[in-house]
Image (cartoon, rainbow, N blue to C red; front, side, top):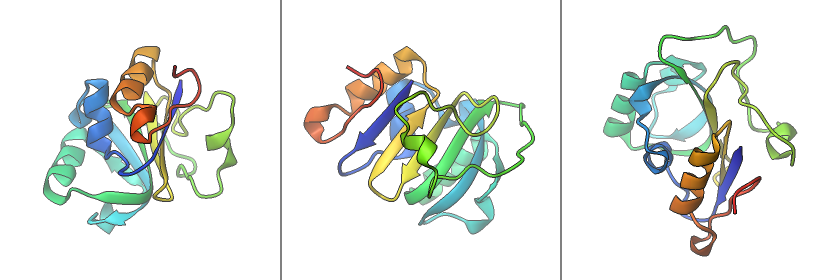
Length: 147
């Protein structure tokens, strides 16, 4: 399932994780195409442990204009042939299913040009949880299978 959240303010990664009832530290993360502040440049286009992600978020409280976060099971880090990207990636907006760009990722969070957050690879329960946390009446929109 894919959920598209629009409106201001956009949720942070931790807001999204909280809405799904999971923790950033539950996964390893491949982060790419990050543009935001404050965020250490050395943390772009690379793997981070969940603990590292949680520490970065707790100490920096970043806001992203662009960025992709792929969550994988802890300890599983597939080879990355090409870093995931958002800018110019029309597949993200395709009405058909869109899978995370990292093979084996549990889900992917895409911050799109400061105007939307696209979360894909979700279970039905995770998609419904996001829809409930960011309902249409607050300016948020859910796409593909959200009620």
